[in-house]
Amino acid sequence: MRVSKEQAQTNRTSLLQAAGRLFREKGFDGVGVAEVAKEAGLTHGALYAHFPSKDALAAEAFSDGIAHRLVSMRRRKRTFEEYLDAMFSTEHRDNLANGCPMTASASEIARQGTAVAASFAHAFEDTAAILEESLWSEVPASQKRHLAISALAAQIGAIAVARAVAKVDPSLSKEVLQAVRNTVRPTLPTKGGKARKSRLPRLPR
Image (cartoon, rainbow, N blue to C red; front, side, top):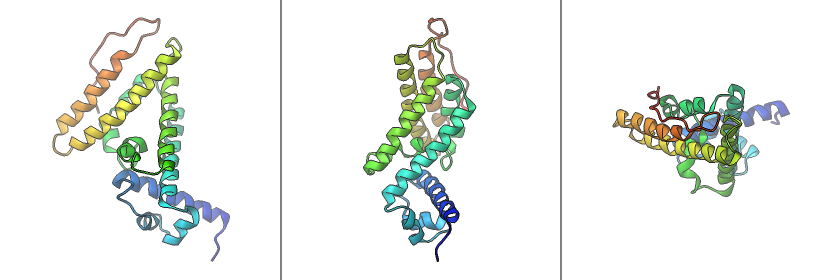
């Protein structure tokens, strides 16, 4: 039975949301297309009507998850330091299913196809661009990009380590987040060009 265009779009959205959630929770290699279809309440055949392969599904699901996250980031218009507080928080560490696709999947990307790798690269660039925009105008453009890329790459690594040790050593997990955030934060210049004095950050929430 043929479905309407509206229903087809609804089905596609459900598949992308289910795939994104499952890939973040279990990893790309830990989830099959049948599981994604079941999670979305659809059949295996319905999935392939929208996506020719698992790689195509993974790439679009990753891009879709990042797109929603970027919209949220632009809407909130946080300062760079506010972004750091959120990026290195325990809430971010613990929100695997609904968190950032990059922090959930970075270690797997190199083993995936070109389409998934391209989605990750675009996501990294777009997120770094928002972080650049959150820095004040006195910071030189080249330094803004350096700070943004450093913070984002540091976050991805810190979250991965913090998640890896959280079950067996929660205090170490928090220490990792605090230490990396503390390393990124003192590099920030103040308005007027003077270096910011180093200070200890608040403990991760």
